View (cartoon, one colour):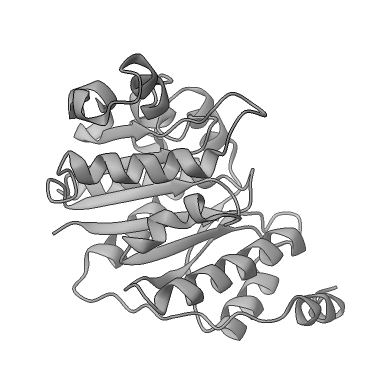
Length: 275
């Protein structure tokens, strides 16, 4: 049975870059990994495959949406470290619901019997949970992971995600493994003080702190994971958090919990204490 992960976070937070590097770390530790991009932008798996692959919605259009005519080979590309990749894609702008496409992709995975063929399945899901389609991966996930930065907007989105996880946990097994602090920049006096306080408040922890580093940005544009970049001391520094996350996830019974989100007004009230 696969370990199923659902990775969420505010749009533009570096979620897909983080997801790809978590997948790479897991694969290099021996896991057979499937990463599923759940965003109409369909670039989640770009660092793994080095290209924008055909999406599920594009493949379905080619067969007039007859699921039974598709095979795994029609929608899956294999990239770095043997990681299999799938992109849900989305409808043309203004013409449909991206969340619906995510739900269709989840259904197709079931029909193809792919859930039992991997050690780890990682869903990289668009932004905040705003509809049933985008929350669908939580129905299958063992653990949710939230990617966040040390700022108010990111934490506000993280709290909404905690609400969704708490709601889903009533009917499903999903728990929150923790929060990954991304783009942590200590050189400017920044850190994770706000995220630390928020994590404690909702009953979770920071899984890792990913540094704000130019090499990570360059790897993204190069279509590579950090693990595929040229060796350097900077590279080793950047790899540490991704390996730490992978080590946490592959241990037996990693500590996780159902979060206890706080109210919107309480978050605003906390702002003064963060300044």
